[in-house]
Length: 87
Image (cartoon, rainbow, N blue to C red):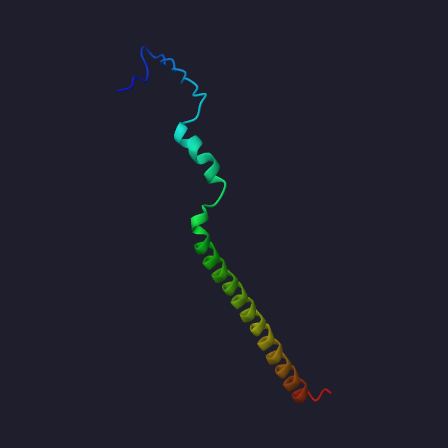
C-alpha cells in the first residue's frame, strides 16, 4: 500500500533511474518496423488490385450518375420549352 501523506506532507517522489540503453529485443526490431516484410508482398498486390478496382468502379458509377442527370435535365428542359412555347 502506498502512503500518500504523512503529517500533511506528501512523500518525496523517487527519481527513476534513466535507462540509457533500449531493450535489446527492441533494437532487433527497429530496422524491421520501417520496412514491410517481403513475405507479405502477394497480399499487398491483391489488396492493391482490389482497391484499384473499387476506385475505378466508384468513378464509373459517378460518371454514369452525372450522365443520367444531364440526360434527365435535358429532357425536362425540352419538355418545359415545349409546354411554354419557347423555341
